[in-house]
Image (cartoon, rainbow, N blue to C red):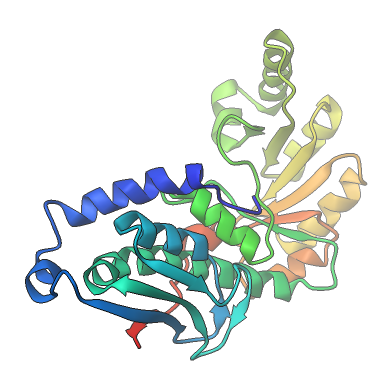
Amino acid sequence: MDKLSKNDILPVIRAAIAEDFGDGDHTTLSTIPPEATGKARLIAKERGVIAGIDVAEAVFKEVNPKLSFQAFLSDGEKVEKGTEIFEVSGPSGSILSAERLALNFMQRMSGVATATARMVKEIEGTNAVILDTRKTTPNLRLFEKFAVKAGGGVNHRFGLFDLIMIKDNHIDFAGGLKPAVEACQKYLRKHNKNLRIEVEVRSFEELEEVMEVGGVDRVMLDNFTPEDTRRAVEIIDGKYETEASGGITMETVRAYAETGVDSISVGALTHRIRSLDLSLKAV
């Protein structure tokens, strides 16, 4: 996901505006004359990676098409404290009304991009890539997964529809790993669907089952230690793609990357991040 389209952005923004505005921004309406005009710039208050500039622009333009917007940077660029990111000018009341929504989107997206960039930096020089997960904010998945890409990560499946992903509960409810995999294979043939199959394994016993039954594309090694991950990668020996997952942190990600695993999925990139500190200042 290299770019967000207007069709991606506008429905989310319009819902956010409706939630925030209600029957009007009465503070601004009561304090700012309708004819007043002004200018403001978004400034980084700390080091990070920026994401969501197009979203911020769309917020301002949706609130008032008469606002002018000039971006100084592009998504994915690094910022230092004091870096100016964009300038918005026009009716002052509209700038004030749109300010918080634009900041909310950009601060969260930039926080995701920053966390992703730090993790990507940690595994530099290895062959592994950093993946996101479905642990996203409902209705903001597009924005958050875009931010992961802006930070140098790779998007995993978007939703339930674009990949067969057999996880622990599927295995338990299906009566075991082998029947779960075989049921998925039968389902795909019956419905003439061309979807890749990924299966989560929790032990070497389950890994051996996967190696025996076959017919999958990727094996997720769930909560394996780095040492066990290395051993599992050796057992798989390139027959399937490999993914490490489960509680992997900034402190441990390098050890996992050095096992030879193909990818490392980190749910914390989108569900446990700190927003980047940004501020819109009048100029």
